[in-house]
Amino acid sequence: MKVLIDACVLYPTVLRELVLGYARTGAFMPLWSDRILEEWRRAAKRKSDHDEMIATSEIALSKAAFPDAMVAPGHETQLRLSLPDDDDIHVLAAAIDGGADALLTLNLKDFPTNALSAEGILRRHPDEFLLEGAHADEAAVRELVSDVLGRAQRHGIDTSNPRALLKRARLPRLGKALFS
Figure (tube, rainbow, N blue to C red):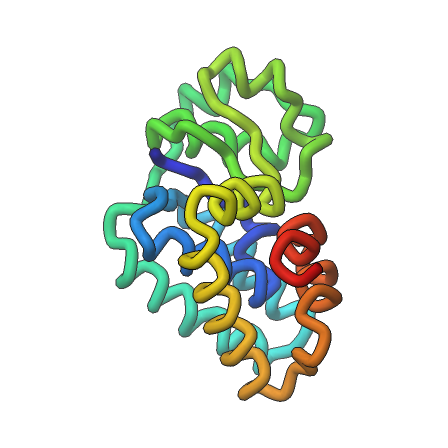
């Protein structure tokens, strides 16, 4: 299964680490475009120059880890599409031209299901997506979450309440399922 990952899922860090960690298990093939990666870098820059530097490094590492993930959305594809926010057309075009089965985004209202279903693409929220993964292989997702929380703790993030941390990462249902 191929999944186009929107920039809002790639930044912030905990969410990205969980999603890309899940991809590393072979559960799906991630896709993105140069513009999506640039949006990730710009979002990090808005926080600080240091965060931009980290994002630039993490983008390079992500490209190396998933060399087949890059999609170049065609101009013709973009011209025929319509979404509530024209700035999101490139995301759907990348999903189409990359042969994605799903588009992973937090911005559900910006990607109406009828626009995506007309292209044979499912709109997925990361919480729902990772929760399904936990139902399919709870041990693997628990291990992934444990690894990500461990890295977060080493970077000074309070992980004493993992359910709350996952909720802040926009993964409340996953947090509830794993830490009830």
